Length: 230
Image 1: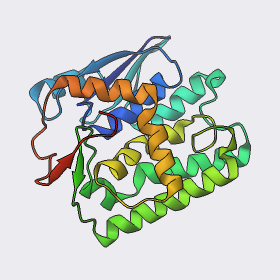
Image 2 (image 1 turned 90 degrees about the vertical axis):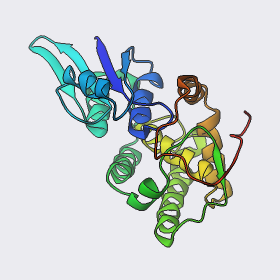
Image 3 (image 1 turned 135 degrees about the vertical axis):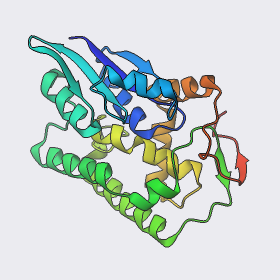
Image 4 (image 1 turned 120 degrees about the vertical axis):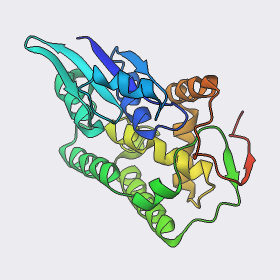
């Protein structure tokens, strides 16, 4: 099976990170194509991925021609369907139902947290003042992570013990808690640390830093502090 994956800036594109993790963490080979967001070459790149406007997008060969999937949740379900041996969702049906539910919630919810705290893997901020709406989103994240970890997390550091699609979807959110210094419990902080110290995530972030590009409008006029362990 041959896959191509279109992504944007590694430092800022949270959905690109999710899409890439679905391949990298489950050892599914893929050719990655990238272009700078909002640049003319970004539109040109996506022409060969169905002509959409958003990343990530996946193209793969089928007996009936090229298959195109351009929504991250659709990409996740497509890969889980095509690679059942990879166990991308928890095996336990109750855990699997909860994992699918919280992944869908991540896909469509947490608007205040995502809008006010865009993903930025370059540095951490000091003195960010979250709104009540952002704090409400963080509280809901704490609730989700706490339930998953307490019920199914005994087998490893991830939400359901072993890494799953849910972890790929929550990875960018975990970085937001760190980047903006948002309040978090010990359990949430442990999960953030599991995310940012994971070798696969570190490869992604290092690739983003190597791009050496600051996307206009993504940095805040706040004091910055180093990323942990930099």
